[in-house]
Image (cartoon, rainbow, N blue to C red):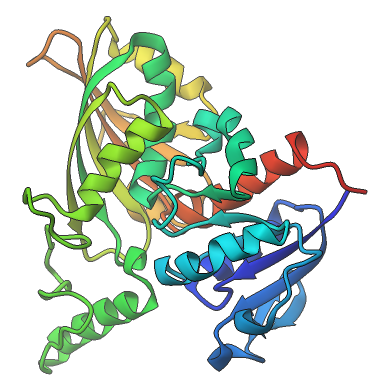
Length: 339
């Protein structure tokens, strides 16, 4: 069985990673098509040892294409997502546009793969927010064991989550500081080099940002709407990988030893938790890795059944491209039958 796959937004950070992961995981493709805006027509991207020239999304006919992996932003998803779905091509969308649509499943395969079956309503499946995705992988097995009542999460999110321009801004600001040039701010409202910014996405009326809101509502849709979640999302001067400090309160007892054992057996998780200098995972360690890493597992004595942990994952991989390809793998294995 093989499938024709289109990658929409193939020239972006996530689109390129989608192509890499499709090849690395030996996804059963009969053909891969790279799609982007008209200005990118002819631009070359790689798929394994092959070079593919980008075609225009505006002019592409999706009939006969089985799966479209989309990572071109919410506006493109809004314009094209349902149109593509109506051709029979199944869309796996990385933007926020469809995530809270009741007719679109929001999927982290290690957590709620069973919900993929709901794709038939619109032929669309949504990828969660990058910070939510890695947290769900870590929370799911613990929730199954002792039921999480409350989650307090503080994120330390890399600039790659804002795209290539943000990565360039961190680089140019860092260089400017070292050579005593003026520091220019174009992507972020404050200097990101040697700084942290407690502001991701737009502010909402209640004082939270939309990124923080996403973590709350997406946790409810993916894992359990009864988990009370509060988040503080912070941009940090790191190129790749998001980190999260997670505080959990359970309904039942959850010891550090049991949590460690559960997480070590859980799919998608690597536990690296040594109580010594360097005995934990940092963003640099996680960059380029498929796993979601958990470190610093420890008891929270301020509540009856409390636990703290540190969670790190490459946001371009598990937070975006890898999760989308994993969804496609489950889709093909369990729902699509094609010769």
